[in-house]
Image 1 (spheres, rainbow, N blue to C red):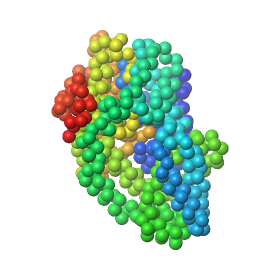
Image 2: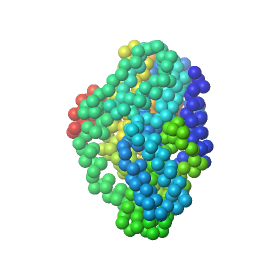
Image 3: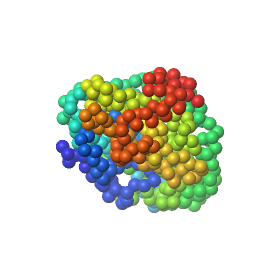
Image 4: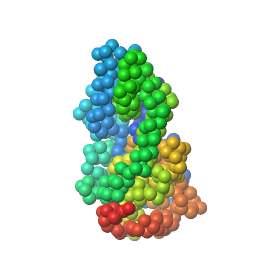
Length: 444
């Protein structure tokens, strides 16, 4: 039913209303926001004939116990020492609810995550209806539970689809398409390199990090308890973990309500002011930018590592243009932020691929909330007309600007798009028929 494509907007409006403001500075934990504008109509005579999709899992609980436990432990210690302010008491209460709700659900999708995925699937079915003629769907997930749950929820939007659904999960040890970042030894070394470490350390050592933690702790604790936290070095980790819990809380509101806990007009946000959140968002997103995004080099290993996914997209459209029946209606892939961000950078999508000269300025052009929010996705839609093909590429359902010449933006001639990206792969010493496990092993 068409009306269901508006579900996500309604859920988000509910979340914003009970929290008193729209969520901001949530980085990769930003709930998915669908576009509010209609897409550009295709040139006369063209209609959608195939979809190639990759998406991040939906809104989730914390991936493991840690931040929630640490926050609760510190707040409980303060309570025992009669050192909680009124705000501190409120934060302790809310943090306790979140810990109770999250217990036993680590790594899983929340209710909001399932709504996000179902709504994206339903919009796809509605907007590109001529694609889905029953030739079949190829559904590919990683071995992580949250990607499998995402695929299941997404396909709720295809409840009336009559074609075959073919499911595939490659073991993590061989999944070069959706978990390529785990299979490259050189990329793993890059993540631990001095280049990355020095930049992240500079943010940790910045005076604003300690000043932010001090402001947060002063709102929640007595001066003596706050002073002790700052003196023994535990104030900054506490503030970081509280921010992590604040960020994930937006994804858990449905479960909080379902448990019968009261909703709060301010939530954990009472522990922060805007300057605090802005700095914590910048600091937490820096690793994402360096390890998954363009970093300081849009041609660096953290981008080249996504070549297997690009090759898979090209091959999927080759099958669709050369043998439509063999290509099926769509290939739907479900993965993680570690795959979406470098793929978007490799494609040269403007907001996802601009490097920074300084780690302090990366937010000028790249923001996790815009590139890899929860349920982030990249979509290639193939349009056909009498043997001719155009492609539209979307990031998070928004039409993307690519570094490929076109006179019909956002539509690109398939032969031009294909030639550009095949050449890009060639410049990285690989190709669409390459053994990608071998490519990842030798990548430098």
